[in-house]
Length: 301
Image 1 (cartoon, one colour):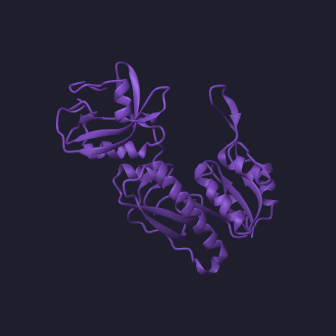
Image 2 (cartoon, rainbow, N blue to C red):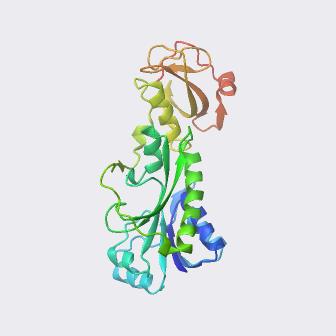
């Protein structure tokens, strides 16, 4: 097929690779514009743009697709289908209608659960035991379109980073399978029951609230690993917790209960396994504590 690919972050890269390797003609790749990044705040292309340029594919990165000129350029590509994966821009109706088979989205949840911007993190925070990827025919509503296929996956204690990588690979494989025989994947209307919305993550949510149960805090750690990282403060310094486990200890919320960084929660306690001090590398807790002791009885912010 003649395919327009639309994606921006790392999540979208496996799908682009899968489409190319399956033999589809990717006539153009759309990605969000380069953004300032790093200490020098130099403009950096998105992961999808880097991958596309490495493969010699044409790349466009408009700020918006609302203008008639952009829409005419999109339509002139004469695509059979547009494949969308975490692109990050709203697609106007003229864009949705331009390809012969419309626009198909790789969405990282089992719709209609977790429509919206942050389905992986919200699934982990909510304690879902299962998630997956849905291939959806796009329409103007927020992830409301009919479903063509899905693949299910156990959450199984994974971090958002781990789950993102697995779902990205599964989404790429599933999209190739759908495009191989569109007629075999009849669109199914999403059920009304079970609709939830995965609102964008606010950085304030990454501060650990020790009054919550240890199970909730452990999910918070996994949902925000590797970024932005659940954190606590001590002596005015921020520490990111990137791995933790629920432990049988018990004690006052926010207080360290031993010299191994077990911390009391609203119910139960959490033992930190991976930690990162500001400006330092991620370390396992034992190695970290050899350089920075946090004795039992310390109160964390």
